[in-house]
Image (cartoon, rainbow, N blue to C red):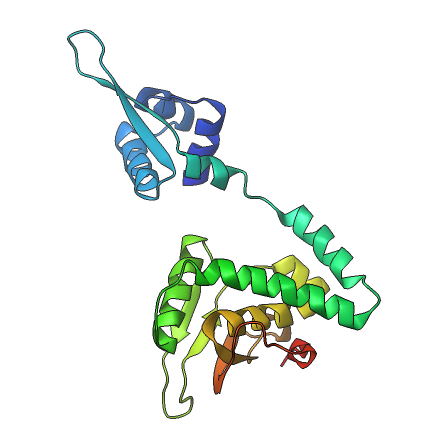
Length: 219
């Protein structure tokens, strides 16, 4: 039994008790409580208390508004169609301007949820933000060989799209440059057989909205 199975059950049968979930999952009440506590800490599940006569109050569990949104955040098919339509635009200048607008809108959303004045603070904030979205990002600290930190993407956010069209890697590079305010270069890439994708920082700062068509070069 997984947390996703609990979320799916709560989506179908709102207002469940521990006993209901024990019968559904076939595990102990203790195991159910542990999972519910974790889901409540994540803000996905809420608990309501009902008074039943003179006995102990009864707890009922249901999805929170955030849990309901998370349960429906499956945009894979839509993303594929939109990306295909974007790439089908014949005029390269029009196609680039559309991609840049997508990047700028995404960057604005991310920046509004991030903190930090220094590059390392912004990187840490980006890693935390992606972690909240179940996207494992890490920072490789600077050393003698790499004087600036490296952003490591342990799991591609767009695996199917990337396999079909590597331009998505360039769009991701543009996005990180906009968000971090630093020119970013794609280093290692899963599509080339690496274990993860890495984005290397440069010493050149980038102002929002100043990326050029040349930025679409993958490396």
